[in-house]
Amino acid sequence: MTLSLGAKKAIDVALFLFLMLMGAVSVFVTFAIVWVLVVDTVRFFTHPEGGGFPISLIRFFTETQWTPTFYNKQIGIWPLVNGTFLIAFISMLVAVPLGILVAVYLSEYASWKVRETVKPWLDFLEAVPTVVYGYFALLFVTPILQKVLEPFGIPVEGMNALSPGIVIGVMILPYTASMIEDAFKGVPQYLREASYSLGASKLRTALLVVLPAAKSGVLSAYLLGFSRAIGETMVVAVAAGMYPQITANPLEPIQTITGYIVQVALGDLPFNSFEYLSIFAAGFMLFIITLILNSIAVYLKSKAVGY
Amino acid sequence: MQTRGEVETRLKEFDIEKYTTSVRRRDAIFEIVGLIATFLVMLFLFVISVDLLIDGWVRIKDGSFYTSYPSRFPEEAGILSSWVGTVYVMAGAIFWAVVLGIPAGIYLEEYGGKGKIARIIEANISNLAAVPSIVYGLLALGVFVYRFKFGESILTAGLTLGLLMLPVVVVSTRESIRRIPRSIREAAYALGATRWETLFHHILPYSLGGIFTGLIIAASRAIGETAPLITIGALTFIAFLPPAPWEDFWGMLLSPFTVLPIQMYNWVSRPQEAFHTNAAAAGFILLVIALLMNSIAFYLRYKVRRKYQW
Image (tube, rainbow over all chains, first blue to last red; front, side):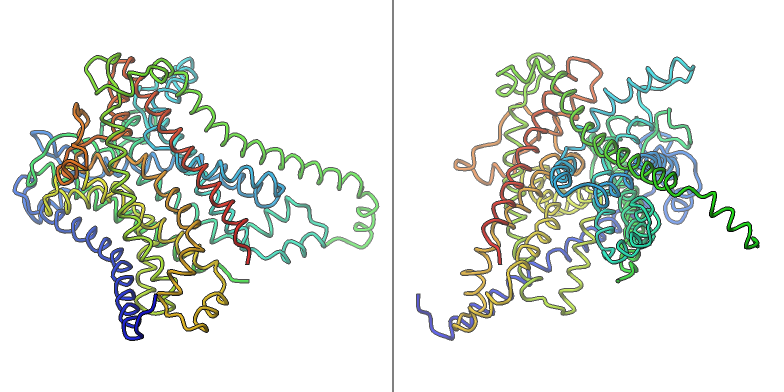
């Protein structure tokens, strides 16, 4: 194929512009997300059914009930935030200890062969559809919890926060563990060797040398896992119930921000209705929470000491 | 402060043999605990698969499950409309991920350098990767469904999942391009090739395997995504198929749809146990699809590693 030099140069420029345009699409997507959330949240707060601005905004942060879909509308966001964080905390109780165990084992102890066999399975765990985890939480974990706890006189409801919390904990585990492992990998070998040469055991080296050196990476991994647990939707939609309330009891039904969005989206709502707009206000809250967590995680990672 | 004598007696009492065995034992115990923890995580996967297989076996082996529409009667309900929907939606999602993601990755790696625009785009993509998937659903609901008037259609769903796949595709494109050594580019330039010739004759062919691997992994995650599609208002009860694309392409794009995970969610959330059997069967099928896609990706990665060693 012979083209003139001019034609070749023109193709070069055109290709460059095309590639840059496609690269910029991601920026448009971010702007679109922020724009949609902001515009529809503003429409929610100026909607007459919520009392209009600024009354609705005050009600949003001061009321203790969340019932925008009822006749008697209460729009306090805290029950949903409470449910969201309750689930996320339970999941971290599972993911924090197990995550560090798995990561230390894989990065400091396991042979190359074990690591190469385990890693694809961890990758695969990340691809298990979340609705499958939801099924598992509702129809496998909850019955087991009921069987174990009810002989002790502790009533466990069919919908509760504990079972999806545990399942989400295991769900985010591969993701957290592999990020912690990456942080460990960033610790230079000579630190380990210095520790060994002083007579320290593997365990001592792992916990007192490698872990402190990778501290900010580990923290950032946990924060990203936490943020993922907060944004998790299907497990809670299936197994946590639809009852927004302020409670610390993990054995009662609750509702998370994501669960509420699913509940409303399953119904058929007109574009301008108060109920429809309420999912954008709730989604905006979710977006802000995860954005803050992710930003702290990114900041921590950037602070990681370069050796 | 201890006196010299005290230290000396303590040194004499110190049994080095005992100390090293106890340290070794602690080390061994930790190794076993770590192994058990890792094993537990894999066991979890195994338990889920077996649980779904046992619960859903009656429907999994039933051929009519794959060829009938959803129904009020659990024994007659099937996944025909949902697996067809999944195929259409995923075709759309992969199309958008390829069209938007691969050029973006090439731009960032080959042209972006350390420029300001490239840095902004890069930070943006890593932010997007951490946005909860349901927020993409709200974006699609607000923009594609109501403002662009695409409706609750296959087109909207494909676009939504395509955007969701974007960060993974961009990152894997960049990584596989980065693996190609500079010398290849310089050799091409030295022979008088322009940038696009270098790109199409060398860089893309060598990195295609890695790009495909990332694409398949991204698709295997998108295929199980439920939340964003419920948010855009996908229906849960569909008793017809979209028109075939070769007959009415536009009609197919704007047709209402349902997908496998949504069908499964619908069945799980019903109280009757017979529907839970259907849900388990659908879940097992989803799990097998995800496993197959991951294995293909794993095999491709292995092949690519073998083929190009610089």
